[in-house]
Image (cartoon, rainbow, N blue to C red):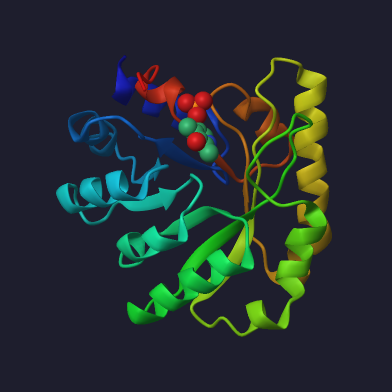
Length: 217
Ligand SMILES: *Cc1c(COP(=O)(O)O)cnc(C)c1O
């Protein structure tokens, strides 16, 4: 895999208003540094401790995004440095992020993960739950978090009509609440479906294998 060539190609291919999150989970620091040296600064990880270890080792101007499911008892490990948490799916989690952000004297940006896949998925909230969370008095009183938008994962399929339907659903929900909640980030699209996601209105894509090659779990 030519990582720096891939990064360069992506930068050319995607509109400037779309942020590229290079998903570096399972990849060694040496490979992530190749992307860094091409100018990439935003990286996504799905395991908190792995992200923390990489944060320790890498230059401090990297913006680390937590894109995976978050366990509440591990929030404390990323609170000092995480730049965006993509997959917030409960008030209890938001409360813990707020608490740990406060301890670190920070305000942490978060996205709410909304279920869009027609297949059954474990993670994410139904749109109504997300809305309830946004409007709840408890959430409004969290001073150390900022919900800046939404995140969704489409079904793993090549059916473009289905992908379009799923992304469109999230985009409509996003648009309906964007102004009221000051949203500016809609995180949708991965290696296999980012083109459709961008067409529908994604502002942030999370791309792993198309940059770093297949992962061996
Ligand atoms: C792994 C992962 C990605 C990147 O997947 P690729 O198909 O390798 O681009 C994007 N989003 C989330 C939430 C992931 O866990």
